[in-house]
Every structure is written in C-alpha cells, then in structure tokens.
Image (tube, rainbow, N blue to C red; front, side, top):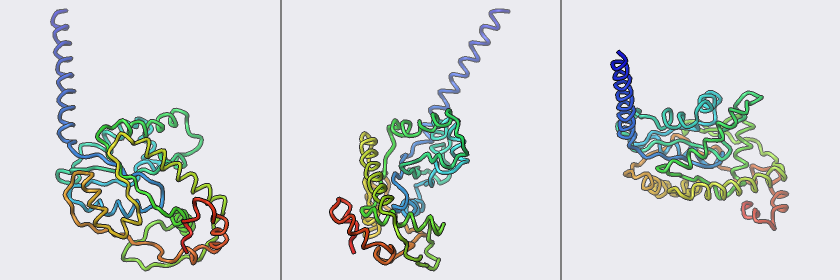
Length: 276
C-alpha cells in the first residue's frame, strides 16, 4: 500500500515537471517576438510615435502600462508576472506579432495614481519594475527625446491647463492663450530632465538602444521610422499617425514672459532653447 502511494507521488511529480517543461517551451515558442519599450518623458511625441508603430502589421503596441491605478495595483502584486504574463504574454492580438512594446516614462511607475498612504510593500514591489526590465536580455529600447526642452515644458503646461493631451487630425486646432512660465520651475525641469536622460542612457547600456529625436521624426518621418523598424528587425511599412501637433505658434507668441526668460537663460547651457 505504501509502495503504491509512493509510486503515485512519483508519478504526479513527473507529470507536474513535464507540464512545467511543456509550458516553458510552449511559451518560448509562442513568445517569439521582439520586446521593446519607448522610453522618455512626457510631451516628447511618445503618443505620436506610438500611433506610427501601432498600424504596423507585425507590431502589438501598448500605451503607458504603469500610469493607471488599475494597472499599478495589478503590477504591485507581482511586477515580474505582470510584465511576463500580462504585457509580454502569449500574444494573439495580431497574427504572428513580431514585436510587442509599450511606453514608459522616466518617473514611472507613477505612484501619484495610487491612493495614499501607499503601503511599503507596494512601494518595494513597484521599485522592481526597472531592474526587471534591465535584466530582460532581449529587450530593445527606443529612447525618445526632444532637443528643445523649453517646448516640451511649454507643451506640458498647456496640456495640463487645458486638460487636452492629444489632437486628432480630424479636429480643429484651437490655440490657447499665452501663458507665463515660472523661471525656477523651468530651470528645475531642464536640470532634472537632463539628469534623467544621462541616467537612463547608462542604465540600458547593455541593451540595443536607438536615440530618436521628436524634431527629426516630424521633419523626416520615413527616415526615422526605417531606423526603428530596423532595430526591431521588421520590414518597413509606411504608417500614418492619427494625431497632429496641438500648436504651431512660435514660442515667443505662446509664452507671455518669453523675452524675460530668454534674458535670464542667455548665458547658460539652456540659452539655445530660446530660438526666437
């Protein structure tokens, strides 16, 4: 009787291990796609790039997956499982997706989305997101930047005030009233964003990384998209974004204290951002 129970336990152990091995190999087979992230800060054209990548027949593209309370609460339970089995899952959204990616901003996971007080366990768990991404050997990084950080900050301020963050190509553009920018807030933004860029360039040094500038993407979209598709080992497909720029005004027309700020930043490394 004891021998029968022993043999049954051995049988169950073997079946369980076989199941694990089968699942692992099945996952590897069905997850034969390129993982990637769009890395950057807010208002650098990440939505524009996202909507250029999404129409590609071989790409499954997520938005920001660490910027919603619901997503963060799921991720906090097990960030590795969230990334491996929710985001980079066995993906059947498009036939034979060859690349799957999402957007992530420098300051995410965005803890401000969570109700206070945030449990220590949740903070520790979400802090693991970046190391997990760094340790994904097959992850590729599109580091999206904007040369003129003044325009990034201006766009951020205008969007926050109007609560309008996207402009569809079918919508009529409405220019906002000129706004005053705070010198100290602007200086802090320049310094903080510059540090973020340097930090993440170093952080993902061991990964294939491509640096894309928003200005180049707008000026010569096909050229920049070809670079990105090459990074992802995809054939080029001409895609179109459903978005357009929310403002086409000169900075001096959009910022009421533009020339005052220009004088203050004149002899600094940030002076070049004030072009008109």
